[in-house]
Length: 70
Image (tube, rainbow, N blue to C red; front, top):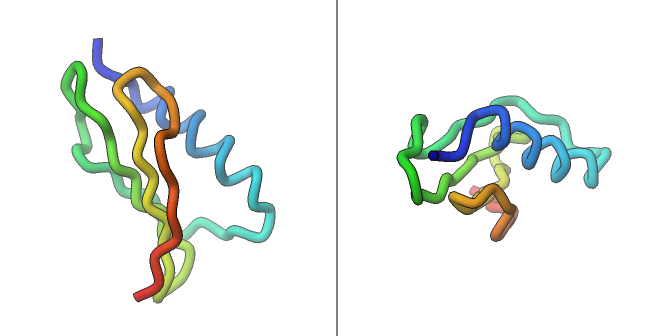
């Protein structure tokens, strides 16, 4: 069974709650509908020039998160 949007939302909320100063503008998932066994990349836009990329494993755990300045 692929990871659900609800499970992804819980993982992202836990991450966002650890950084109280982070203000989320939008979240985009790639792929938007994962298939079984597929990891998901979440892009969390926090400003015009900064976003956070998170890789979530198919098993439902946060594998990596990094801030990207553009």
